[in-house]
Length: 194
Image 1 (spheres, one colour):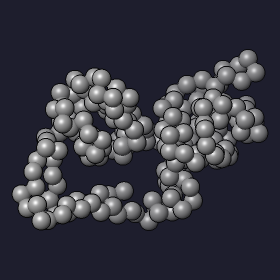
Image 2 (cartoon, rainbow, N blue to C red; image 1 turned 90 degrees about the horizontal axis):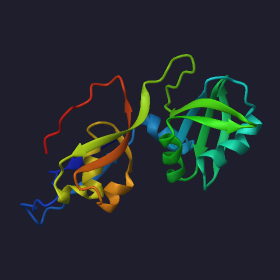
Image 3 (tube, one colour; image 1 turned 60 degrees about the vertical axis):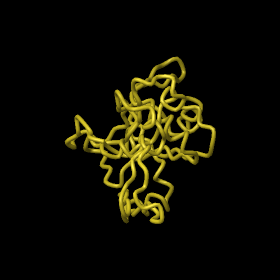
């Protein structure tokens, strides 16, 4: 998704030099993003198991309980060890991605898995470089803790999907944290000028 701001972005706390001029936001979706949205894949995660000993019918009952899924969901087999989890609620999607590497308890055994976001160019033979990670934004001014400001800053790194509870509640004013989906092979900024 690309975000285009027109005609001039305003920073939180900055006054509009031309109050008669409206600042608007336009979002342009790529063809792949439109396809993912239409097919319900925009909130899809891939769960890759270390081994392929679990049956899909068992995973359909165990995974929703394990992730605490509250809404509708679909669980399907993509490849030998790859499960596609589609969620109906955005919160369920974020919770699933939050368990990036973990163990699934089932019948007294622990099954190691890794969760990552589904992408249209997913290939089960290749390891993905996409990951959901928390980024920290230290020493921000309190007026920049607004959701819109944080999400705009996080766009410089990846696709923002969540803001942590302490940042939302403003109980940790020293650092804001935003969860983003990013490509670990991309060159990432170390600093951001506001």
